[in-house]
Image 1: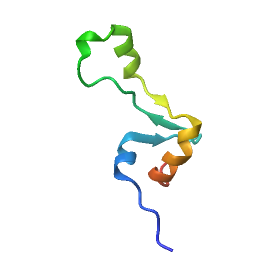
Image 2 (image 1 turned 180 degrees about the horizontal axis):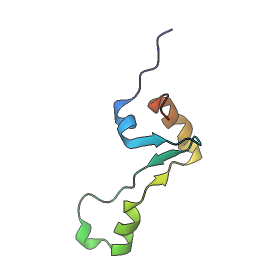
Image 3 (image 1 turned 120 degrees about the vertical axis):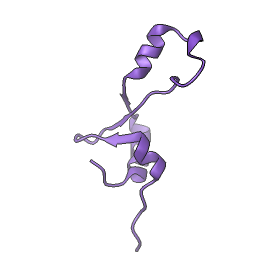
Image 4 (image 1 turned 45 degrees about the horizontal axis):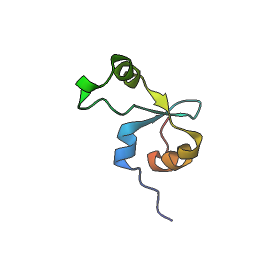
Length: 66
């Protein structure tokens, strides 16, 4: 059976940590920033983790990283 290919878009966006969680960047930092509150933009700088419901799907796409 052939190997599962890693999804190129997913490997650029997600990182699998040693504990097995998946780290991701936040949205809403690209355009129309003048109308957004400072605290909201500051919160978007930090990374966050993918929810458990999505983690299984993303791990399949990312492959054996981490």
